[in-house]
Image (cartoon, rainbow over all chains, first blue to last red; front, side):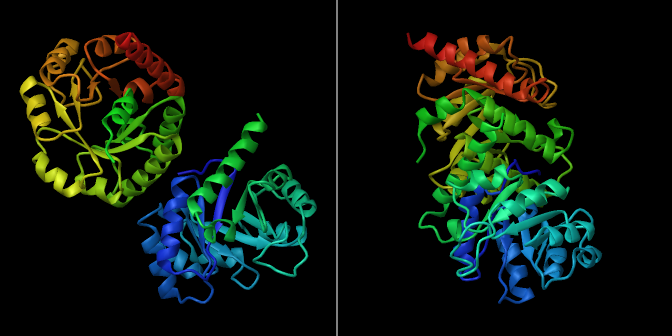
Amino acid sequence: MGPRQPELHVITSGRQSLNEVLRVAEAAFLVGMDYLHIREKQRTARECMEWVEALAQVMPRERILVNDRVDVAAAAGCRGAHLAYHSLTPAEARRVLKPGQQIGRSVHSLAEAKQAAVEGADYLLYGHIFPSASKPGLEPRGTDELRKIAAQVKIPVIGIGGITPENASHVLAAGSAGIAVLSGITAASDPQAAARGYREALDRWKESQR
Amino acid sequence: MRDRERLRKSMQVYFVVGTQDCGFSPERTLAIVREALAGGVGMLQLRDKGSRLTDEERYRLGLEMRALCRQYGALFVVNDDVSLAVRLKADGVHVGQDDMPLAQVRELVGEQMYIGVSAGTVEEALAAQAGGADCLGVGAMYATASKADAGEPIGPEGLRAIREAVGSGLPIVGIGGITLENARNVLAAGADGVAVISAITRASSPAEAARELKRIATDAANGQSS
């Protein structure tokens, strides 16, 4: 069940309870979140599996990605797995996942992006683009490299890091297929209103491209 | 809260759909639903009958539909399956004459959910009204290929008799074989809206078909009030 373009990804913080994340996920999905990434590094495979099953009650399983835990993604039959530098490579993950499952990869440079594409990633997550509370002290990378990656790599690139409804258009204008948001939605006092704000920003940009 | 006037307005263009109407493809179904909502469908009913989906796949389709309805400000209704409607937190459930007693349905769905009931005769309509139905689906208006067990068409005249019997307070949608060409007759007979399947799913542009139906229904509503 294909998402609209541009895509809105939401990534869990690792700091919220399952009940909190269930509330955020249900609310955000209703107003146009396309994918939820379960990124809970401190949790066991068992816990991650329980998260997928619980979340699949409030949003479609096909819209859930599991960070790093390729085993959980395969067992749960969700959308797929999102890989980081310390994860299995896309080619290795492919041996574990079922046909049709997606593989994403976080990248921080054009070279990494090309490598991930060669290894069979289905999409890339590039960042962080703007200064962000999730990565304090790290110099943001801006949109220049994103522009190169989007131009030179065939698979979709999603921008991440400090993206707000106000600056999202810069990320899209650089050629990205969407944006990923963490605290901008998960830590918002009203996650549904926040998700709606992002969705509307993405839709406005798409409308302006006609 | 249930709001009959919102319901009446929403059901002006009421789209009933399942994967069986869209080549058995959930993706195709959702693409058509999205277009139909963009065109002006105000109420969507998931009626997945004789399809090839598992319960789990149908649930996921329902989740997608509910979200789309929310984004377009439309009401989302589940046909027949009361427990699925509850699980999906649908805005409403639509039940036929052969399904469980209305009091039991109400008990299961709670006070927030709209209950629609199919009626083909004045007796059925009055019974549904007495039982607490929020709205009626009256048909079949015309012969239809979309629903094999629809029975002999009662036509707009049958709907007119039901409207006279239940009074103006109860929202009524006509269903069965309604097209862009005959929709006006159904509305003129006293329906608040038209429920369609193939008029949208088989249109070359589902959005355009929905937009045209919306225009016809709005014209009819304005004509009646002035």
